[in-house]
Amino acid sequence: MNEHAPPKSMSERADELEEEKMHEMERIITKSTIAHLMDGHVKMDTSPEMRAKHPGKFFLMGDDPRLPPMPEKPTLLDYFRHRFASTAHLLQSATHALNGGQPEKVVLACLLHDIAIVSFIRCDHGYWGAQMIEPYVDEEVAWAVKTHQALRFFPDDSVGYGYPDLYRELFGPDYQPEPYIVEEYKRARKHKWYMTSRLICTNDIYSFDPNAKVNLDDFVDIIGRNFRQPKEGLGLDNSPSAHMWRTILWPTRFL
Ligand SMILES: [Fe+2]
Ligand SMILES: [Fe+2]
Figure 1 (spheres, rainbow, N blue to C red):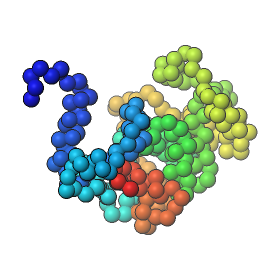
Figure 2: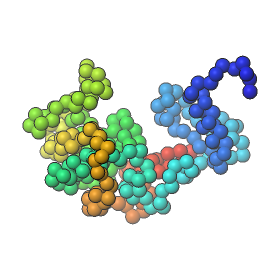
Figure 3: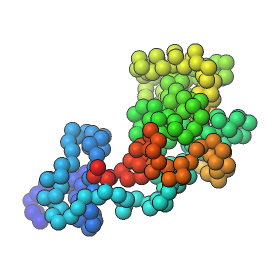
Figure 4: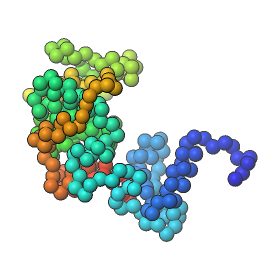
């Protein structure tokens, strides 16, 4: 090692550690371009470059050994347990709806409203989340999940919903939603399922009580009755959004 080299930054050290770990792997693990974009780089992992770095190895085309293993035919509950980075917020929102006597459709919508954030992508999480679940739930549930993203920004005095204080803290006092969100809100306001989506907002709990008792088991039956679990496994079926679930199952497959 060159003693006169400038000290390494945290991120350089992290990259090195990742690189060292990669060499121990049987297969070459690549990152998708979107992951690089998220790091602020317009770049991609190319096969010649990766093969030169890891001679004699094949690319990963299945399970990522760094992630918790998933069963052969995964269910929504398996994704909750092994792929969702955090479930407290979803469980707290759904518990709030359940205790408030809301119908199962609303409870399910609350349980699933932010799944895109906890498992996939933040930007436009309502739209991504709705697409993920659309083939498996009542149309009204998917619509409500899509639209809550816009409704969150707009008060509704009739149900005692105000602009969230948290948003002021998170985005600053002057933040204004983009025109596409405003337009989505206007359309939703006139929609027959407006209140279903609004109920996601009124049950969207942000005060995390570390002592609040929430348990995925409380929702197993509601999921069973309201989420059409494909027999092949969620993501291994032929639905229009199966590929999204597969991507969460195998996020580092080369193709
Ligand atoms: Fe949300
Ligand atoms: Fe939420």
